[in-house]
Image (cartoon, rainbow, N blue to C red):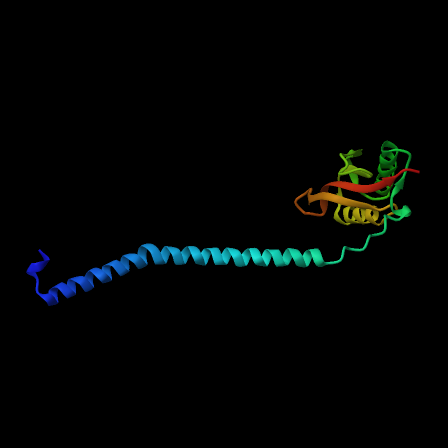
Amino acid sequence: MIDQFSPLSRRLIAVGLLILALLLLVFFIVVPLYSTVGSAVSDMRDAQFRLERLEAIRARPLPARTEPIPAEQFIKAANAEAATELLIAQVNTAVTASQVTMDAPVYADTPPGPQMLAVALRGSGPADAVFALFNQIERGVPAVRFKAWQISAADATGKTLRFEAVALAAWGAL
């Protein structure tokens, strides 16, 4: 059948088939291979970067050992229950000195870890008194810090605030 065409037509058909074969080769083999190799090279560079970063972190000197909490900054008691009672008494002393009204008595909450105490507070009062109470509790000795708190307006004017808070303190044996 190809014998019917002239030599020029045969050459054009051969060139056309060659171009078609090259295009098929490019689209079905070279492009996917190029994409796969490019992705692999990118992944290799990312892995190399992560490895260099980890080696740099490993080469850093260890941080200096910190000092333990000073003795005056934690509650000294024979056990956790006694320490919790001391913390509740400290918070109640600050509350009675303020103009804040407690909606519920201060009570022990679940501590976040060993040698830690947690107490929960819920109350309301004038905005200045609430902030002064929080400030007085945190500035006292031993150190007490608020882990979480929520303050909202108790009335439409916003002059009276309602609050819920969890205070934390460290304790140690006598």
